Length: 289
Image (cartoon, helix red, strand yellow):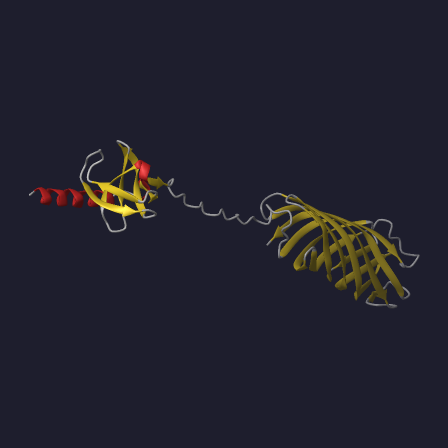
């Protein structure tokens, strides 16, 4: 009967240790030649097993009367004096490496967007040369227009750009409108989270350029498909994550060949080659993707 009680106690101790949370046990090993495993945590208790030196054991976190409750590789559960085993501290699990969160284009000063769309509008200050001397163009100095520009990234700091403009100005004698389509490069030498500086150079053709000259009730009209070129400096300031306020300043040249009597309506003019150039000042928005 006594042996049956001992067996039941040992079984109960094994069950109790087996259901302990993983964090309630530590690793240890025997540091004496032979360590006795007692039935209870007190001197003179019944010895139920023994283990040799260097035997690994699982050890409870707390002591009772200087004894640790242990489980040995054979499955025996009992108590060993704390002087006969080395107990390690609880194993620390390595903290998962913090994965750096990916920043948005606006959070990373070095990040450049794959594409940009710009919408701007503003004024152009014109300078006409080559117009026949009899035609007064003094009141055709300023006009308004708008621009759509799409930029696609080629490499760091360099974008391929396509640009469409519309510009119109009407004076008392000369009226001028044009729709240039241009392609070029935009270089970004400086870019931060909030500010971006760009320099662009473009060339193309004005596919719908119309020049109307009216004098003394007579009128001549010219339509042309001629070369146009443009250079600019842009500065943008971030408003939202993918939207910036854009300022642009630039200079455009525009050539127009006008043959004699083209579309003449009573006003006969000699053939002439005119250049329309001027400073552009525009403001708008830039959307980044």
